[in-house]
Amino acid sequence: MRSMLMALAALLVMVAPGFANDDLVVKKSPHSVGMTLDKLTAVLESKGITVFARIDHAAGAVKVDQQLRPTQVLVFGNPKLGTPLMSADQRIGLDLPLKALAWQDASGAVWLGYTKPDALKARYAIEGRDEVFAKITGALDKLTGAALKTE
Image 1 (cartoon, one colour):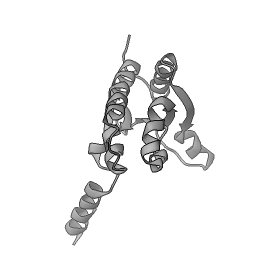
Image 2 (cartoon, rainbow, N blue to C red):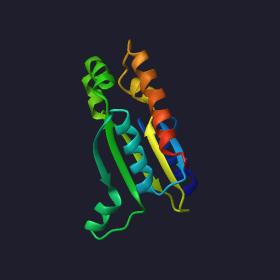
Image 3 (cartoon, rainbow, N blue to C red):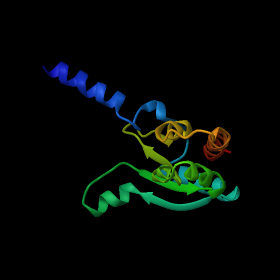
């Protein structure tokens, strides 16, 4: 019975919309969680991309007397790229502005992840904006790559 429940749980994880590993880009960071997002913030701002918010989930956990390994999210965007997507389907506003999550895993490794733009394209069935999605995909790869450099 237990193995059947485990198999069912694994199946649910694989098919849950928006949570498939295929929907995420995850890169290992050589920096701490805080430094990873500090560097990403600097890179984004140097390119004229607006940083709207930074949320420290671990600090929030402390406020309710709980513990969480370092986990922070950065919310950022560029209306020149986001607006054409929202004009195609305003529901994508649930996922825009974009977000990047930095977290420390149980082994101490730090990761930087974000949702693949093509996953958003599929989630909202947006057509006719392939060039915009391609620009966002390329930009996210370059910007996060620059933030992860060790100089």
